[in-house]
Length: 430
Image (cartoon, rainbow, N blue to C red; front, top):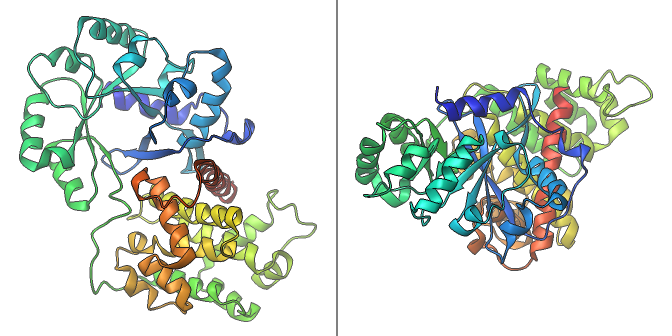
């Protein structure tokens, strides 16, 4: 295992900071997104922090000034924290640095093992740059070369890098293979970025890449005519029941009891310190009476989506739940639609990735009203707007934003969603 990968795995065991709730939530007026970085087993080992271009944003947030330390800590906790396999993890943040920022010594005063400095592709291998990178590497920083293409004179950069990122889309299969052949003799770990499809992932695996970045999880290869497994059928039936405004306690209890594991987890959660109920809950019917349908709906969906499946990386559930939670937050901020409808719309919009089936084939099994169905399938109406805004923001596709929401509203909604998913997944694992 390379030095870069070893340093990443160490952070899983010894996170340098407590969970973000220890700091509170900090509001930022800048649009920021995180893009997961996976190893060959599709385990998340880090997040690249992406932001919409704004004057001096990097300097303002990632500064060496002591006054910025708290901001940096909260920001990195919000965007790089996960709760997975029964433990809290603070993953490394991959952050872009241009030549000016690099040479001006504007690095944040944070633990060095928590940052991977991405050197942008337009940074030249000049003597001052090489000297600075040597000093940073000696000081314990991990270095990555972003969108790298090996050209004459760039070997000194390659010799200092721990990680080299190659853009799959920009290079194409032939040039990608040629670059791998040139670079593989160096000790750096190869990272394939802009991986958007399962086919591209498999190509990069075959070429020897150890790390992968992109949204291929949310755009898997869809198989027409695939049959749903029994647990997926139960989840669909549960979604159908939960989506009915006038569902009876008896019907809902019957659906939940079909999955004994789900039933046990719901009851265990309700009897935990998280809810601090005055008496022990012993049945789903009692849980519905005590909590109400909306609260039970939320926790049931959360438990169902985060129950481990051998073929489903935990990051996919996190992405779907974060989109749903952000839709809900935007609904609260705008008053356009009911927040529970927004949450359900965001959730349903990601089921094609979860089931590896066309969304239309999944929706036909659900008794959705026309507005919800069209929002999920065609992104129409106010619900469709919230789905689009949330997905564009979370995936850093800033050009696809409608302009209906200002940056502060979008940023706050995203941060609330990220924190809710982290806190909620931790609650059901405790």
